[in-house]
Image 1 (spheres, rainbow, N blue to C red):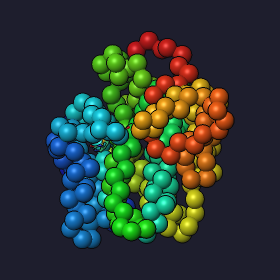
Image 2 (cartoon, helix red, strand yellow):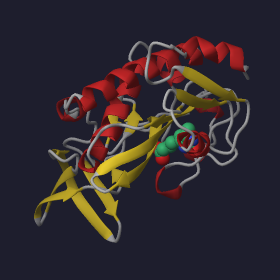
Image 3 (spheres, rainbow, N blue to C red):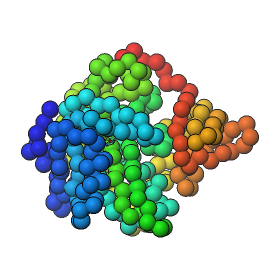
Length: 265
Ligand code: BTN
């Protein structure tokens, strides 16, 4: 467990993102707190961190599990000057920022749309980006990030250990969560500035993609797309070569993939 003072090391008043860090020993969901901060202008610079969440949520209504004081649970409220059609770029850029922050400890890849995975496909981090659109523009967004940092795989429940790992497992040692947050906020700050200058993260997102060439099953609402992942389209959609030809999936979840080698927890 930790206290607020140690987390202030990750704040930097010169940055737009993470000028201040608001720490909670326990909270419902950091995403909800970040959303509340957005209601109080200017709010953008403050990021929300917690040691544990009672209502941590993942994509598609899932629960995000994380034991107290081990991982990084952070939500970043932003008001990016971006068109709504570029919302996927915000998620992609945030995933690339997590990848960069983790790079001194582990080489992570991005499993579409924005899971961070180890080379064997075990999940290390996930993003929940909750965006409000106003007409054609993004009014604001909360970038919620959960990274398994010091939660060792051997301590995870079996059903999670079958598909997840942590930076500490990959690095072979415990990590400083505050230093990791500092690198993450700096990387996010650069990514956001790049997006607003008009740069696209597409080439780097493609380069980081873990699914390419693997057989996948993707659920997109009522549609099930099965075939071989064939890269990322210009609009961030996953391309899948199926028996019917190439299909593009803009929103959904990969529910099956060529299994990574089974590693005992
Ligand atoms: C996913 O992979 O499904 C996304 C997981 C996102 C979890 C993070 S933890 C911090 C923030 N607060 C939440 O309630 N969720 C996100």
